[in-house]
Amino acid sequence: MVACAIAVLVDSLLYTDEVHAGVSVYGVDLGGMTKGQATAALARLADSAGPVTLSSGDKTWPVTPQDAGTTMDVQTAVAQALAVSREGNFFEDVYTRFRLYFESRDLPLNGTVDRAKIDTVLSGIAKELHVTPINAGLAVQSSTVQVIEGLNGQDADTSALGRQMESLFVTLRSATLEVPIVVKEPVVQAADNRAAQEQAQTMIGSSITLTNHERRWTFTPKQLASYLGFRSEGQNGVPTLVPYLSEGRMQLFLRSLAPDVKIDPVDAGFESDGTNVRVIPGINGETLDITATAKALNATALEPTGRTVEVAVTSTDPDFSTAEAEAEHFDDRLSSYTTKYVCPPNRATNVRITTKYATNVFLAPGQQYNFDRQIGARTEARGYKLAPGIVGPNTLEDVLGGGICQVSTTMFNAVFEAGLKVTERHNHSIYISHYPKGRDATVSGGGKNLRFVNDTDHYIWIRGSSDGITTTISIYGTSDGRKFTYSVGNFYNVKSAGTVTINDPTMAVGTTKVIDGGQTGRQLKTVRIVTLPDGTVLHNNTWISTWPAYPKTIAVGTKPVTP
Image 1: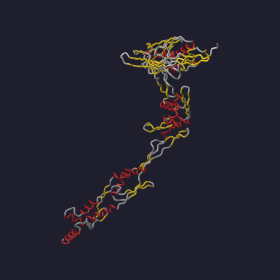
Image 2: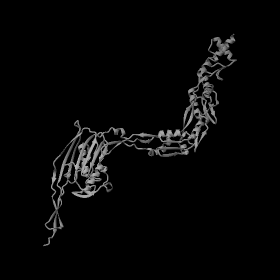
Image 3: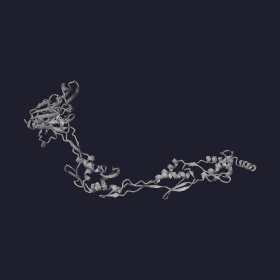
Image 4: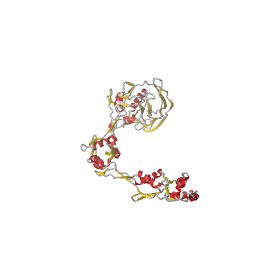
């Protein structure tokens, strides 16, 4: 008994602060080590752990315990080792110490990993190994559609691999693991595209004729092949290729057809026989509808025969429709004015045909009337004759169209009394007494002009008649109740012409002859005010007519008289 007591006492003294002999952790003998020594020994063990190497083909990826966030619980293992001979009562601990001399005890070294770090590492490897499967497709070569076989893809199976790596890291083991690969077949197989191949071959197998009235355009198989495209559509849950003629690829060609297809709309209008007005119906225009034409071409391309299709067009309305024209009325005579002047036959002819050219005109709201442009060129081919016309200062000469200012003056007075907006008017350079005082209007080809605007809300009809002597112009439309008042002042800035004499050797001495009667210079102001029934002033016009002074010219004879 004494000997046993002494042995127990000695054992207690030997392992007072140390791990008892016979205790190890994960194969590392810690017997006789203090807590610090045991901790250092196990830390060295943890630090000595090698990487887990992943491989696939000729690629490898070493992953260290640090990469996986591996942590070994050294402190707990040391605490458990120290407690092996100290965790029971006195008799139990004595018994345990005694047995450790004959039967050692190996304790586990537990650890943890950061699974998120492992997953991050595996995600990067998976991206390197990923191969996207390629669906079977169709290819167009010349005018032939061929099936292209699909290609398998692959992905790394990282789920099971991550569990293996976790087990190796917490047991401090190095190893090489093959990355498991999962083969990914393409969704679309070659057999799935057979129907699309047949359809596509039909679409480009022969020409298509596009028509528009009498025009024809041909799409050759080669041209159709350049327009061919494929889109994927789900059919019974399977993505299936569908061939089509691409509108985008046809845009350039179809746009080139647009000018030929386009038909401008024609506004409704009016015509008259001089007494009655008839509406000329408007005509709708046409413009090429590219999208609808592309759809029509697609539908026709799917047919093996009857491959002719009409272009699709969009109807365009005229600005002035037939209904709008029919709503217009010419029941109100807005004004009428007549001039009369007995003149030679040639002048009468000019007045008569100019009245014809200048009238029977329909003017839209806001439209401007241009007298010079309306009557056109004064040529013999159009019936004009030589007659006296003003060609310079106080100078009359025979010109084609001489005398037509009677028509422009008649027109001006009709417009004047209709209360319309006048945009251009000029008086004659020679004062003509048989015209209304301050209300004459001269025109010259490409020069002075008479212009006015229909500033009513409805069309107006300008009618005229002339026998060359008596000329009448009337304006019909829809009255808005406008009225006009006017005043003409007295002549002012009157200037004497004076007299000029010239020698004439053909006349006898002492004789005289008036060559040119001259003209007194003067000015005249004409004011017109146009108002609506509510008193609103539409126009307040002032026209200043100016006639320059021309001297009286007298020829004096210088020829000597024979006795």
